[in-house]
Image (cartoon, rainbow, N blue to C red; front, side):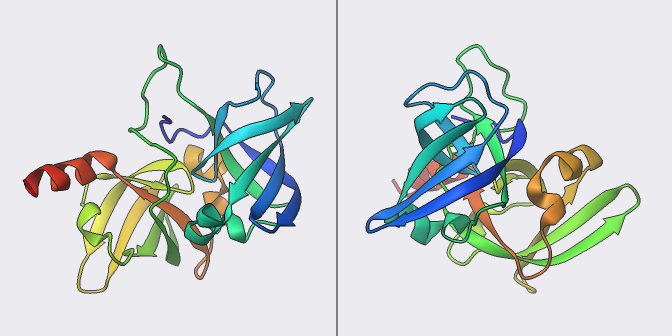
Length: 195
């Protein structure tokens, strides 16, 4: 489990496409990685295969590539990184699984004072999970939905300077795709309501 509080941005050093997926090597300052650790890479929970001083590798299966933006990453790209939450850790963001539901597109970025408002397309088939003042995870970042415009088919989030400076959101522009994980609590509530 993760919190959506990004620890650092890493850099994709190498991408190797294989018949059943792709292997990604990421440069990082994490010093305590072990084989089998879970790391959120751009919001996607990946398993550390190999690691060394300042890097780790992880494999992404075809199913993951089809559902996320990891199919688009290339050498030199920055990615948001977060290690799994330890049992005694603080939950500063919200419950994030690293199980990306879909992707969506940035349709607007506007500076508002010291903050930024980012507007995205409501992800088709997941609209019911996007609620004003609810939680959403975009590229691994825990954010609060500021507004939902069902008529326009969009939602927006406010990004504070710290989040802007410490994550890859500062690099996102209209037309870019981002990974979306909706609030798992909302999905469980919907499932319970079905019975």
